[in-house]
Image (cartoon, rainbow, N blue to C red; front, side, top):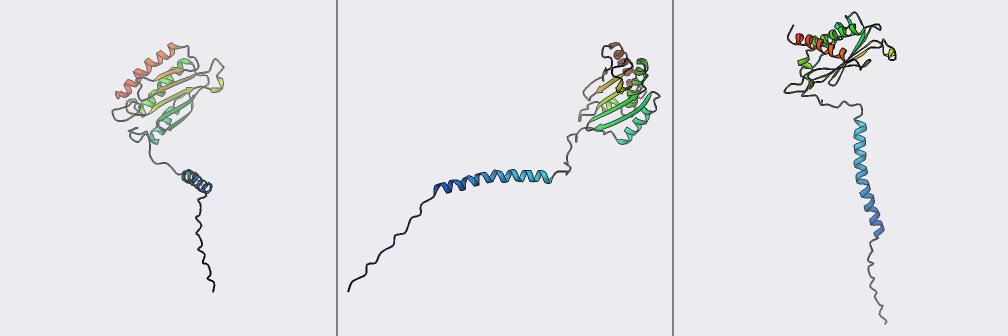
Length: 204
């Protein structure tokens, strides 16, 4: 009687397929930043149109300029005989006043009117209160643009005057844009403004 030989099957040792491992690791490494960027983009898209809370002037602009004060200022300016139109805008911390005046205005009339307009601003919004930095906060910047007709830029009758005042300036910067070579006009206007605004601030 012949005995059957029993054969022992050898277990196959599976080999690691390194190209596949490298591929999987590469995909994982690529997926992580892709998902992160995708989430950021999604959050940004979802937030579109949503107001952002917070204000970089939160600790500044105290007291704040109100809509009632702007309406009062507009009424005072429009009451001037040589004023045709006025547009007042308040964006962030900048008050801009655009005043369109009579096309035939003379330099002497412009001097008188400009002094009066600045005085109106100082009456409704005292300069030391609203346009001067104090110990705790930065205040508003002021732009006052006075012009007769922007279409007359190449004409001798063209008049354009700008006042600029920020909260760290002692005096406004005055520029006669239509005739920058006229320092006498600017000097006269400075003197008249200084006297009038000092009276306003002192309650005169």
